[in-house]
Length: 391
Ligand SMILES: Cc1ncc(COP(=O)(O)O)c(C=O)c1O
Image (cartoon, rainbow, N blue to C red; front, side, top):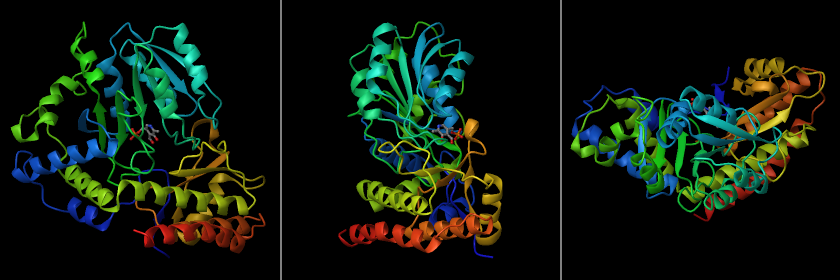
Protein backbone atom coordinates (compact mmCIF):
# COMPACT_ATOMS: atom_id res chain seq x y z
CA UNK A 1 0.00 0.00 0.00
CA UNK A 2 1.45 3.44 -0.89
CA UNK A 3 1.99 5.95 1.93
CA UNK A 4 -1.12 7.94 2.80
CA UNK A 5 -1.46 11.13 0.77
CA UNK A 6 -3.69 13.58 2.62
CA UNK A 7 -5.42 15.80 0.07
CA UNK A 8 -8.25 17.26 2.15
CA UNK A 9 -8.76 21.03 2.50
CA UNK A 10 -7.12 21.06 5.92
CA UNK A 11 -5.61 19.95 8.11
CA UNK A 12 -2.71 19.40 5.72
CA UNK A 13 0.55 17.46 5.93
CA UNK A 14 3.52 19.14 7.57
CA UNK A 15 7.22 19.13 6.63
CA UNK A 16 9.60 16.65 8.29
CA UNK A 17 11.34 19.44 10.21
CA UNK A 18 7.97 20.53 11.67
CA UNK A 19 7.24 16.92 12.66
CA UNK A 20 10.61 16.61 14.34
CA UNK A 21 9.91 19.63 16.52
CA UNK A 22 6.58 18.18 17.62
CA UNK A 23 8.41 15.08 18.90
CA UNK A 24 10.74 17.03 21.20
CA UNK A 25 10.62 17.24 24.98
CA UNK A 26 8.55 20.14 26.31
CA UNK A 27 10.40 23.30 27.33
CA UNK A 28 9.17 25.93 29.77
CA UNK A 29 6.84 28.60 28.41
CA UNK A 30 9.12 31.14 30.10
CA UNK A 31 12.37 29.70 28.70
CA UNK A 32 14.49 31.80 26.34
CA UNK A 33 13.87 29.23 23.64
CA UNK A 34 10.11 29.49 23.82
CA UNK A 35 10.03 33.27 24.23
CA UNK A 36 12.21 33.66 21.12
CA UNK A 37 10.03 31.25 19.19
CA UNK A 38 6.87 33.15 20.08
CA UNK A 39 8.52 36.45 19.20
CA UNK A 40 9.66 35.06 15.82
CA UNK A 41 6.27 33.51 15.13
CA UNK A 42 4.51 36.81 15.88
CA UNK A 43 6.88 38.78 13.63
CA UNK A 44 6.43 36.30 10.81
CA UNK A 45 2.66 36.35 11.32
CA UNK A 46 2.66 40.12 10.84
CA UNK A 47 4.79 39.72 7.69
CA UNK A 48 2.57 36.99 6.36
CA UNK A 49 -0.54 39.09 6.98
CA UNK A 50 1.29 42.15 5.60
CA UNK A 51 0.21 44.26 8.52
CA UNK A 52 1.62 46.74 11.00
CA UNK A 53 -1.25 45.84 13.33
CA UNK A 54 -0.92 43.71 16.47
CA UNK A 55 -0.48 40.00 15.75
CA UNK A 56 -1.95 37.49 18.20
CA UNK A 57 -1.42 33.71 18.36
CA UNK A 58 -3.89 31.74 20.50
CA UNK A 59 -4.25 28.08 21.31
CA UNK A 60 -7.47 27.03 19.67
CA UNK A 61 -8.82 26.44 16.20
CA UNK A 62 -9.95 28.89 13.53
CA UNK A 63 -13.37 29.13 15.15
CA UNK A 64 -11.76 30.64 18.26
CA UNK A 65 -10.17 33.19 15.92
CA UNK A 66 -13.57 34.04 14.45
CA UNK A 67 -15.10 34.46 17.91
CA UNK A 68 -12.13 36.46 19.25
CA UNK A 69 -12.37 38.82 16.28
CA UNK A 70 -16.04 39.59 16.76
CA UNK A 71 -16.41 39.61 20.55
CA UNK A 72 -13.58 42.09 21.08
CA UNK A 73 -14.50 44.80 18.61
CA UNK A 74 -18.30 44.52 18.82
CA UNK A 75 -20.40 45.00 21.95
CA UNK A 76 -23.62 43.40 23.15
CA UNK A 77 -26.55 45.16 21.50
CA UNK A 78 -24.54 46.32 18.48
CA UNK A 79 -25.14 44.97 14.97
CA UNK A 80 -22.89 43.39 12.39
CA UNK A 81 -23.33 42.50 8.73
CA UNK A 82 -22.32 38.96 7.74
CA UNK A 83 -21.54 38.25 4.10
CA UNK A 84 -22.77 34.70 3.52
CA UNK A 85 -22.11 32.54 0.48
CA UNK A 86 -20.96 29.29 1.95
CA UNK A 87 -20.66 27.10 5.00
CA UNK A 88 -18.46 29.30 7.19
CA UNK A 89 -20.01 32.78 6.68
CA UNK A 90 -23.08 32.09 8.86
CA UNK A 91 -20.81 30.93 11.70
CA UNK A 92 -20.04 34.60 12.36
CA UNK A 93 -23.76 35.30 12.86
CA UNK A 94 -24.13 32.29 15.17
CA UNK A 95 -21.21 33.22 17.40
CA UNK A 96 -22.32 36.86 17.44
CA UNK A 97 -25.70 35.71 18.83
CA UNK A 98 -23.87 33.86 21.62
CA UNK A 99 -22.42 37.26 22.64
CA UNK A 100 -25.73 39.15 22.41
CA UNK A 101 -24.66 40.82 19.17
CA UNK A 102 -27.28 41.24 16.43
CA UNK A 103 -26.34 40.00 12.97
CA UNK A 104 -27.90 40.81 9.62
CA UNK A 105 -26.79 38.84 6.63
CA UNK A 106 -26.40 39.45 2.94
CA UNK A 107 -26.81 36.18 1.12
CA UNK A 108 -25.27 35.01 -2.15
CA UNK A 109 -25.69 31.66 -3.81
CA UNK A 110 -23.26 28.95 -2.72
CA UNK A 111 -20.47 28.67 -5.26
CA UNK A 112 -20.88 32.24 -6.49
CA UNK A 113 -18.87 35.24 -5.30
CA UNK A 114 -20.09 37.95 -2.94
CA UNK A 115 -20.87 41.01 -5.07
CA UNK A 116 -19.21 44.16 -3.64
CA UNK A 117 -21.77 46.61 -5.09
CA UNK A 118 -24.62 44.80 -3.32
CA UNK A 119 -22.68 44.86 -0.05
CA UNK A 120 -22.26 48.61 -0.54
CA UNK A 121 -26.04 49.04 -0.97
CA UNK A 122 -26.70 47.03 2.18
CA UNK A 123 -24.19 49.10 4.16
CA UNK A 124 -25.92 52.28 2.97
CA UNK A 125 -29.15 51.13 4.60
CA UNK A 126 -27.87 49.85 7.94
CA UNK A 127 -25.76 50.98 10.85
CA UNK A 128 -23.20 48.25 11.31
CA UNK A 129 -20.34 48.08 13.77
CA UNK A 130 -18.55 45.50 11.63
CA UNK A 131 -18.72 43.54 8.40
CA UNK A 132 -17.61 39.90 8.35
CA UNK A 133 -16.53 37.97 5.29
CA UNK A 134 -14.87 34.63 4.53
CA UNK A 135 -12.09 34.89 1.95
CA UNK A 136 -12.13 31.26 0.79
CA UNK A 137 -15.12 29.16 1.73
CA UNK A 138 -13.91 25.61 2.26
CA UNK A 139 -17.22 24.04 1.27
CA UNK A 140 -17.66 25.78 -2.08
CA UNK A 141 -14.09 26.65 -3.11
CA UNK A 142 -15.11 30.26 -3.76
CA UNK A 143 -12.54 33.02 -3.28
CA UNK A 144 -14.44 36.17 -2.40
CA UNK A 145 -13.13 39.54 -3.65
CA UNK A 146 -12.11 40.69 -0.16
CA UNK A 147 -9.89 43.43 -1.54
CA UNK A 148 -12.78 45.06 -3.41
CA UNK A 149 -15.10 44.65 -0.43
CA UNK A 150 -12.44 46.25 1.78
CA UNK A 151 -12.37 49.25 -0.53
CA UNK A 152 -16.08 49.67 0.11
CA UNK A 153 -16.15 49.01 3.84
CA UNK A 154 -13.41 51.60 4.50
CA UNK A 155 -15.79 54.37 3.45
CA UNK A 156 -18.30 53.36 6.11
CA UNK A 157 -17.97 53.66 9.84
CA UNK A 158 -17.59 49.88 10.19
CA UNK A 159 -14.77 47.52 11.05
CA UNK A 160 -13.81 44.91 8.51
CA UNK A 161 -13.30 41.33 9.76
CA UNK A 162 -11.91 38.73 7.35
CA UNK A 163 -11.64 34.97 7.83
CA UNK A 164 -8.62 33.78 5.86
CA UNK A 165 -8.51 30.30 7.38
CA UNK A 166 -8.48 28.63 3.97
CA UNK A 167 -6.31 31.12 2.09
CA UNK A 168 -3.56 32.63 4.26
CA UNK A 169 -0.18 31.29 3.18
CA UNK A 170 -1.49 29.99 -0.13
CA UNK A 171 -3.11 33.06 -1.67
CA UNK A 172 -2.40 36.76 -1.60
CA UNK A 173 -3.86 38.63 1.37
CA UNK A 174 -2.72 42.17 2.20
CA UNK A 175 -4.31 43.04 5.49
CA UNK A 176 -3.35 46.73 5.70
CA UNK A 177 -3.65 47.60 2.01
CA UNK A 178 -7.02 45.87 1.81
CA UNK A 179 -8.30 47.71 4.91
CA UNK A 180 -8.87 44.61 7.02
CA UNK A 181 -9.23 45.53 10.70
CA UNK A 182 -9.27 42.05 12.17
CA UNK A 183 -7.87 39.20 10.13
CA UNK A 184 -7.82 35.62 11.37
CA UNK A 185 -6.55 32.31 10.14
CA UNK A 186 -5.72 28.82 11.37
CA UNK A 187 -2.38 27.02 11.56
CA UNK A 188 -3.52 23.85 9.81
CA UNK A 189 -4.11 24.74 6.18
CA UNK A 190 -1.88 26.62 3.73
CA UNK A 191 0.58 27.53 6.50
CA UNK A 192 1.18 23.78 6.93
CA UNK A 193 1.58 23.71 10.69
CA UNK A 194 -0.37 21.25 12.87
CA UNK A 195 -3.95 22.16 13.81
CA UNK A 196 -4.50 23.90 17.12
CA UNK A 197 -3.48 27.53 16.74
CA UNK A 198 -5.34 30.56 15.48
CA UNK A 199 -3.45 33.61 14.21
CA UNK A 200 -5.02 37.05 14.21
CA UNK A 201 -4.16 40.68 13.63
CA UNK A 202 -5.83 43.79 15.06
CA UNK A 203 -5.45 47.12 13.23
CA UNK A 204 -5.05 50.44 15.08
CA UNK A 205 -8.70 51.15 14.31
CA UNK A 206 -9.73 47.79 15.81
CA UNK A 207 -7.62 48.42 18.92
CA UNK A 208 -9.11 51.88 19.27
CA UNK A 209 -12.61 50.38 19.08
CA UNK A 210 -11.65 47.98 21.89
CA UNK A 211 -10.29 50.82 24.03
CA UNK A 212 -13.50 52.81 23.52
CA UNK A 213 -15.81 49.96 24.56
CA UNK A 214 -18.55 50.92 26.99
CA UNK A 215 -18.83 47.40 28.37
CA UNK A 216 -16.18 44.80 29.23
CA UNK A 217 -15.42 42.13 26.63
CA UNK A 218 -17.98 39.37 26.91
CA UNK A 219 -15.34 36.63 27.08
CA UNK A 220 -12.43 35.69 29.33
CA UNK A 221 -9.94 33.54 27.38
CA UNK A 222 -10.67 35.40 24.12
CA UNK A 223 -10.24 38.87 25.66
CA UNK A 224 -7.68 40.75 23.50
CA UNK A 225 -6.79 43.03 26.42
CA UNK A 226 -5.59 40.07 28.51
CA UNK A 227 -3.37 38.78 25.68
CA UNK A 228 -2.04 42.11 24.45
CA UNK A 229 0.90 42.42 26.91
CA UNK A 230 2.00 38.85 26.08
CA UNK A 231 1.81 39.41 22.33
CA UNK A 232 3.25 42.94 22.31
CA UNK A 233 6.37 41.82 24.11
CA UNK A 234 6.91 38.10 24.62
CA UNK A 235 10.23 38.95 26.35
CA UNK A 236 8.28 40.51 29.21
CA UNK A 237 7.29 36.92 30.00
CA UNK A 238 3.96 38.19 31.23
CA UNK A 239 1.58 35.33 31.90
CA UNK A 240 -2.08 35.09 31.08
CA UNK A 241 -2.63 31.44 30.13
CA UNK A 242 -0.20 28.65 29.20
CA UNK A 243 0.48 28.62 25.45
CA UNK A 244 0.78 25.36 23.55
CA UNK A 245 4.57 25.15 23.61
CA UNK A 246 5.03 22.45 20.92
CA UNK A 247 2.50 24.03 18.58
CA UNK A 248 4.14 27.45 18.74
CA UNK A 249 7.57 25.90 18.09
CA UNK A 250 6.10 23.96 15.17
CA UNK A 251 4.37 27.05 13.80
CA UNK A 252 7.61 28.99 13.92
CA UNK A 253 9.30 26.28 11.84
CA UNK A 254 6.39 26.14 9.35
CA UNK A 255 6.53 29.93 8.95
CA UNK A 256 10.31 29.81 8.57
CA UNK A 257 9.88 27.35 5.69
CA UNK A 258 7.13 29.51 4.21
CA UNK A 259 9.39 32.56 4.09
CA UNK A 260 12.31 30.48 2.86
CA UNK A 261 10.17 29.62 -0.15
CA UNK A 262 9.05 33.25 -0.38
CA UNK A 263 5.51 34.57 -0.24
CA UNK A 264 5.22 35.32 -3.97
CA UNK A 265 6.70 31.94 -4.90
CA UNK A 266 4.27 30.22 -2.59
CA UNK A 267 1.26 32.00 -4.05
CA UNK A 268 2.50 31.18 -7.55
CA UNK A 269 3.01 27.51 -6.67
CA UNK A 270 -0.56 27.32 -5.33
CA UNK A 271 -1.88 29.01 -8.45
CA UNK A 272 -0.09 26.66 -10.87
CA UNK A 273 -1.07 23.60 -8.87
CA UNK A 274 -4.72 24.67 -8.67
CA UNK A 275 -4.78 25.30 -12.40
CA UNK A 276 -3.27 21.87 -13.09
CA UNK A 277 -5.67 20.09 -10.75
CA UNK A 278 -8.74 21.72 -12.26
CA UNK A 279 -7.54 21.14 -15.80
CA UNK A 280 -7.13 17.46 -14.93
CA UNK A 281 -10.55 17.27 -13.29
CA UNK A 282 -12.25 18.94 -16.26
CA UNK A 283 -10.40 16.73 -18.74
CA UNK A 284 -12.04 13.80 -16.95
CA UNK A 285 -15.39 15.31 -17.91
CA UNK A 286 -16.19 16.39 -14.35
CA UNK A 287 -17.78 19.73 -13.52
CA UNK A 288 -16.12 22.21 -11.19
CA UNK A 289 -18.77 23.45 -8.75
CA UNK A 290 -17.29 26.91 -8.23
CA UNK A 291 -17.89 30.00 -10.39
CA UNK A 292 -15.10 30.59 -12.87
CA UNK A 293 -12.76 33.52 -12.12
CA UNK A 294 -13.51 33.24 -8.39
CA UNK A 295 -11.95 29.86 -7.70
CA UNK A 296 -9.61 29.51 -4.74
CA UNK A 297 -6.11 28.20 -5.35
CA UNK A 298 -6.15 26.15 -2.16
CA UNK A 299 -8.82 23.57 -3.03
CA UNK A 300 -10.95 22.27 -5.88
CA UNK A 301 -14.60 21.37 -5.53
CA UNK A 302 -16.27 19.30 -8.22
CA UNK A 303 -19.72 17.79 -8.62
CA UNK A 304 -19.97 14.06 -8.02
CA UNK A 305 -20.89 12.58 -11.43
CA UNK A 306 -24.22 10.81 -11.98
CA UNK A 307 -24.23 7.16 -11.04
CA UNK A 308 -21.27 7.46 -8.63
CA UNK A 309 -21.58 7.99 -4.89
CA UNK A 310 -19.27 10.45 -3.20
CA UNK A 311 -18.59 8.03 -0.34
CA UNK A 312 -17.72 5.17 -2.75
CA UNK A 313 -15.41 7.40 -4.73
CA UNK A 314 -13.47 8.44 -1.65
CA UNK A 315 -13.40 4.86 -0.35
CA UNK A 316 -11.96 3.47 -3.61
CA UNK A 317 -9.40 6.31 -3.77
CA UNK A 318 -8.32 5.40 -0.27
CA UNK A 319 -8.39 1.62 -0.68
CA UNK A 320 -6.45 1.53 -3.94
CA UNK A 321 -4.04 4.46 -3.75
CA UNK A 322 -4.31 5.66 -0.15
CA UNK A 323 -5.26 9.13 -1.37
CA UNK A 324 -7.57 10.90 1.07
CA UNK A 325 -10.01 13.51 -0.27
CA UNK A 326 -12.99 15.16 1.40
CA UNK A 327 -16.70 14.92 0.71
CA UNK A 328 -19.18 17.76 0.36
CA UNK A 329 -19.80 19.96 3.38
CA UNK A 330 -23.16 21.20 4.69
CA UNK A 331 -25.84 21.22 2.04
CA UNK A 332 -23.31 19.96 -0.53
CA UNK A 333 -22.87 16.65 1.35
CA UNK A 334 -23.08 13.80 -1.16
CA UNK A 335 -23.15 16.24 -4.08
CA UNK A 336 -19.57 17.42 -4.28
CA UNK A 337 -16.10 16.15 -3.67
CA UNK A 338 -13.27 18.35 -2.40
CA UNK A 339 -9.56 18.05 -3.04
CA UNK A 340 -7.29 20.23 -0.94
CA UNK A 341 -4.05 21.40 -2.57
CA UNK A 342 -2.39 23.74 -0.16
CA UNK A 343 0.54 23.98 2.20
CA UNK A 344 3.46 21.77 1.17
CA UNK A 345 1.63 20.25 -1.80
CA UNK A 346 3.82 19.33 -4.79
CA UNK A 347 3.21 18.74 -8.53
CA UNK A 348 3.75 15.00 -7.90
CA UNK A 349 0.92 15.02 -5.36
CA UNK A 350 -1.38 16.43 -8.04
CA UNK A 351 -0.46 13.74 -10.57
CA UNK A 352 -0.93 10.98 -7.98
CA UNK A 353 -4.29 12.36 -6.90
CA UNK A 354 -5.55 12.69 -10.48
CA UNK A 355 -4.41 9.15 -11.23
CA UNK A 356 -6.21 7.86 -8.15
CA UNK A 357 -9.34 9.83 -9.06
CA UNK A 358 -9.41 8.63 -12.67
CA UNK A 359 -8.72 4.98 -11.89
CA UNK A 360 -11.31 5.01 -9.07
CA UNK A 361 -13.97 6.53 -11.34
CA UNK A 362 -13.30 3.80 -13.91
CA UNK A 363 -13.58 1.14 -11.20
CA UNK A 364 -16.95 2.60 -10.26
CA UNK A 365 -18.15 2.35 -13.86
CA UNK A 366 -17.63 5.95 -14.98
CA UNK A 367 -15.50 5.92 -18.15
CA UNK A 368 -12.66 8.36 -17.64
CA UNK A 369 -9.55 9.08 -19.68
CA UNK A 370 -7.04 9.27 -16.84
CA UNK A 371 -4.03 9.50 -19.14
CA UNK A 372 -5.43 12.51 -20.97
CA UNK A 373 -6.24 14.19 -17.64
CA UNK A 374 -2.73 13.64 -16.33
CA UNK A 375 -1.18 14.85 -19.59
CA UNK A 376 -3.29 18.01 -19.48
CA UNK A 377 -2.35 18.64 -15.85
CA UNK A 378 1.32 18.04 -16.58
CA UNK A 379 1.10 20.63 -19.36
CA UNK A 380 0.05 23.18 -16.74
CA UNK A 381 2.65 21.99 -14.25
CA UNK A 382 5.41 22.79 -16.75
CA UNK A 383 5.10 26.43 -15.74
CA UNK A 384 5.86 25.33 -12.17
CA UNK A 385 9.20 23.92 -13.30
CA UNK A 386 9.86 27.10 -15.27
CA UNK A 387 8.93 29.28 -12.29
CA UNK A 388 11.16 27.22 -9.95
CA UNK A 389 14.06 27.35 -12.40
CA UNK A 390 13.89 31.15 -12.68
CA UNK A 391 14.31 31.50 -8.89
C1 LIG B 1 -12.96 29.20 5.96
C2 LIG B 1 -12.99 28.57 7.31
N1 LIG B 1 -13.31 29.33 8.35
C3 LIG B 1 -13.33 28.83 9.58
C4 LIG B 1 -13.05 27.51 9.82
C5 LIG B 1 -13.10 26.98 11.20
O1 LIG B 1 -11.82 26.59 11.58
P1 LIG B 1 -11.58 25.44 12.64
O2 LIG B 1 -12.17 24.18 12.10
O3 LIG B 1 -10.08 25.41 12.72
O4 LIG B 1 -12.23 25.87 13.90
C6 LIG B 1 -12.71 26.67 8.76
C7 LIG B 1 -12.41 25.25 8.97
O5 LIG B 1 -12.20 24.50 8.09
C8 LIG B 1 -12.68 27.23 7.48
O6 LIG B 1 -12.36 26.48 6.42
